[in-house]
Image 1 (cartoon, rainbow, N blue to C red):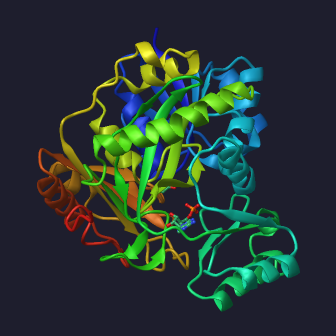
Image 2 (image 1 turned 120 degrees about the horizontal axis):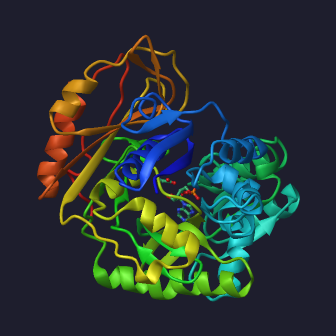
Length: 425
Ligand code: AMP
Ligand code: GLY
């Protein structure tokens, strides 16, 4: 039977998910809501104008179009309960329930969960009141990280260098409404030192399978300078991702997390993303995300040799332990091309040239902030494209991705020149 799948989201991550699903012989059509200029023209894919947070609209759309499975890309609809609403309507959905997604939706809840289950993480205190938070700050010996507890589009964490900066961050959240409701409860968290790594796993409620561990680059500029972004590129393999490390994170973090959630009656189905800091005293959880990473997905899914649709089905059915998941023995690099002004300012839409040339150079160009008008692609967002290439060696994959980047052009394009080139260990 050929299935119609609905993918929720509009980023490069969702383009990669849709493209990978479309390769399945079991999938007849992938509809992406709302999608972007890339998913509009991808083989077997089309877009539908439904907003990711329109829960009722998505349920209705899926029902009337006889959608066999809904795959939810971003965190907001998960935290809002989209998967619960789809479940109630009897529509299979890949992604955690709202109760399970609370691990990402509330950082204070996540911290409490980690501590209650003996999962390694930094010390933190929670505050609603600015005066109490400022008093606590004064008493601390080191400058903490200030975190809005709720979802703030990846911007709610302030890594302050001084207590003055930390105090400013506290005031901006608790007194000046900087992140709205999301910042009315904050964490003052011990600053962890070390290398950061993200461990992502497919989960079926009981079992989990770790994906190839891609490392992303969050800073805007080459050499890890400039402001934090959603991610400017990613590469695989990373020299820090040893099998010992993956075993340790599986044992100390993923397994106890899934076991505790199942015990609490909120089994985790979907992708669990553990953001880890490799400290002198072992790996510690910085945060959980309840979804695939962006741009990590744009290097990980091109390496998948198995059928993504069947993996998602197995996750929904609790059958992951009997499902084959094969990965190519290859390196992969993705380089994000962003608009002028990203991540601070948005910029006007401009035409994009050279997409066919990048494809002809052997790259897969995943679209993020793009739209199509009169057959021409235009920029329509901060992160515009992720240009991915595979090769047996990392250095060749990086060279190949940069040949693709060189073929693409649009006014004001920003990209890092060191993705997969100067690998940190
Ligand atoms: P998040 O929005 O939770 O992904 O956090 C953004 C970034 O802030 C992380 O990727 C880390 O680089 C940094 N960060 C968060 N918490 C800590 C911490 N406790 N110590 C050091 N850096 C942190
Ligand atoms: N690349 C980081 C994230 O998806 O949160």
